[in-house]
Length: 223
Image (cartoon, rainbow, N blue to C red; front, side, top):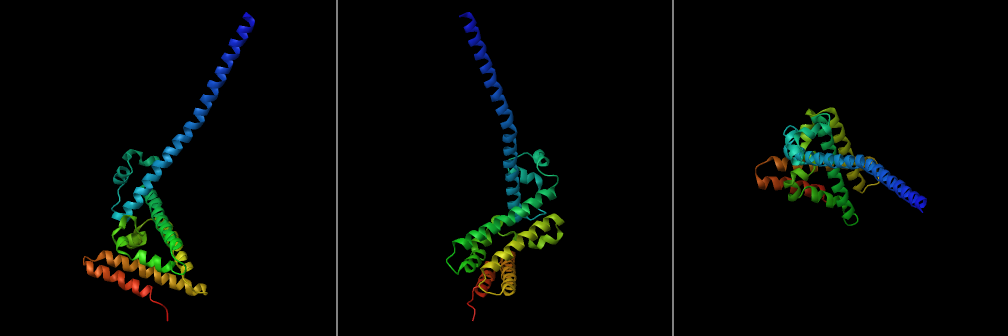
């Protein structure tokens, strides 16, 4: 009996060690994943805050300290996520463009048949979009600043602008691809330019007039 009891205790002890070892292995494997997930979440908050800030205050008016504070992080944590301010601005420009295109796609998808482009234009030139700079179109908010930005910022912004051109072109009802692209360029330039001017002036009536004139021109039935 003593032998059996000893064997039983030894087996229990070995089993306990095995379970403990397995738990330690699991915890060691999970810890890096938890840290990575936490860092990714923090990174995402910084980029989201920066994407709002560049539209709200422009590239020059977007400071690292303010972005980190808005993201709920310390200034010192910045370099754990980005090599430089320009690296952050590049991701912010890409995020702002991606968000704008995602909203445009949602509008197009929700619109009645054959009216998707009309819905998109109405939404873009609406008073709500006019006022909602930090969540609005980065082309209108930042277009005039782009020539002075780094090549990386311009590259990602250009890629997103090309996506928007393709989206608008796809919604233009014409069998000729070249004609659809040309109309897309004119439509997008009119939308963006009108919004820029509507935001630039300090006369509310003139601001509204810019948007309404562009809307009327872009949605006028073709003869």
